[in-house]
Amino acid sequence: MLCISVRGFNRKYFILNVLEGLQSAVAQEGKWGRSARALRAIHGAEEDFRMSLAVNKANGVLRANSMLVELASAEAQRVGGRDVGQMDIEELQARALLVFMSADLLPGLHSDRIAPEIHLSPTGEIRYHHEFEDKAVRFTAELRHANQREREQADYVNRFSKQSDAKGAERDDLKKALTAEYGVPAELVPELAMALAIVAAKRGSGVYSIRRSELIAEVRAIEYLSNYDAGPLIDRLTMPMRNGWDDTPPGTTAADFDLARFDRTLAPIGRPIIVLQAGDDPELAIAPGVIERTVMHNVMGAAYGTLQGRFWSSPAMRSYSGKVASGLGLEFNESVADKLKQLNLRAWPSVSPSWCLNHKRTEEVTRLGDIDVLAVSPNDKVVWVLEAKDLKLCRTMGEAARRLSDYRGRIKKNGAPDELLKHMRRVEYLRSHADLLIGRLKLPGVPKVCGVLIVSSPQPMQQLQHEFSADSTVVMLDKIASVPWATGW
Image 1 (cartoon, rainbow, N blue to C red):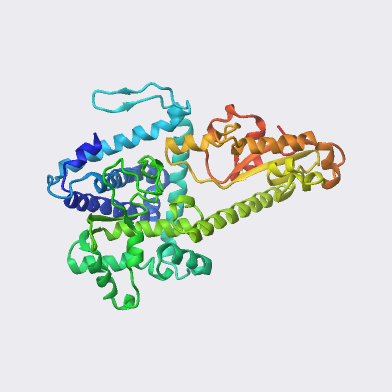
Image 2: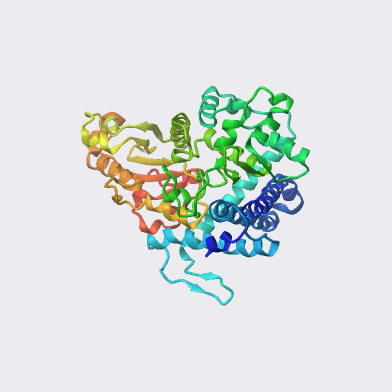
């Protein structure tokens, strides 16, 4: 129904209008975040939390308008079609959010996390069992909000500080990866949004349409960018044209167009420049604020390894982001080991079971994989096998359900063990060979072997502990002292 509704509108004017709303929401969200310190100083943390829920309105527009831009890119009329008005947009926003909510329910329904009973209220609201949402999402959402506000508060101070740390942006490996991904010198990538804003100021319009060749010339006309060709970067940030929503271009899958998933490379967060009219010199829709948001999101995602795999086009960037994520995982293992040492445990990050047991690395042992952290209690009676995971927060029920699907202690459809089962197998293997730990770890006798999962941020597994064994208990890093290290489970 949403595709049919969008199909009746003129493509150009619909997309430009929706991009204006999207850009305004980006500005509102940024302004709210930048005021974090002032709001907390005036109102206190609790009142700030209550008041800042208003940012949800901006988030709703961000989600709805992003969906509408993507749908219109595939479905709206390229010639003719109706003009769009504010009431049209508001109705379509409501429908888009309804589609998002429905799609977000599917992973929970498919995994039996949500009872398969959905009702519609007389006003059109979707009513369903909220137990899973309350346990797995709402708790983490509140903590995520608190963490984000604290980070925004720190950013507020940093903006007025003379100190700055640019070492991340200066890393040669990141620059090389950005150049490979975007086809331009790395320094041009963060400059593009400002250049497009300068063009917008010259045109007297915050959102505008322009031919590709003209846009490249306008960017080059800016004095400090006169030596650059922005063409490859503009092309990389342009959303491919599709002949209808069901059209899947070569190299894409249905998942690339799943509206309930965040961080998709073919969504506006990855491709914010929209083709209005195709051809050798296509007409493009430009919203500088939306493009700035994309560039910041993508560069930070590359720098911290939070965007991986299919999000990137170039092998160089995929390799770089994978290495960054792997390196951060090893760093997290070391930080967990350091915390344990502060609690008077002996701890070793990133070790193999063969090292722990001091025996050959057989094929069976190799399949087990490495232990993130191995620890021995202060009284030398308990050996702990720790699974340390620096996992992102789950933002939706769909993400929570997918995260839980990796931590069920089962064999996946492809025949491989999930993350929890891998951990449980390592614990059980060391438990069955506990006598071999005596020599390597210099223990007085056969130890008790226990397992635990340490995470960096709130996870849905914490709220569903009853489903798992004691060896898969999930504990936040800042609550690590609460584990009974001396006695075990």
